[in-house]
Image 1: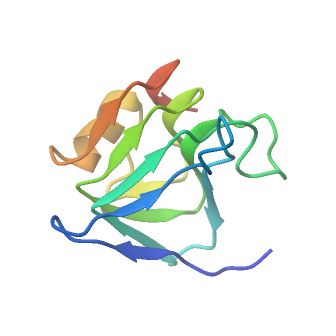
Image 2: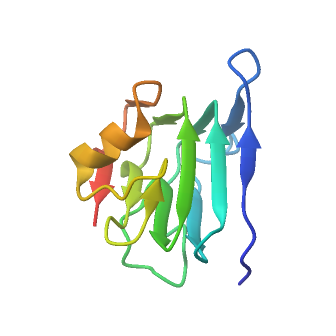
Length: 131
């Protein structure tokens, strides 16, 4: 493994999309399990059709989603869309993950931390799975 980070900084007129190959039904999604202090930034990003299996293979029991975050992950999220997740739109380990400088304690607090610009559409089980 590595302790790298992801900076996907789109803008309103030029968003970034992470999705499946059109010939496949779904893909793993994005998984974050990073060291303390490493910030992963997502701005104007759409993540869709993820969650076919565990995005973090070393944690196969984690809830499947377009994006899963656990460990001491720090996420800086602005105006993102989590759409058509095979299971969940977003899965967050609320005991350790920091979102926009907050440590949310449940799904409602995750939604508040994400802010009004982040949306969820068509996720099969839940928009946010807090574990």
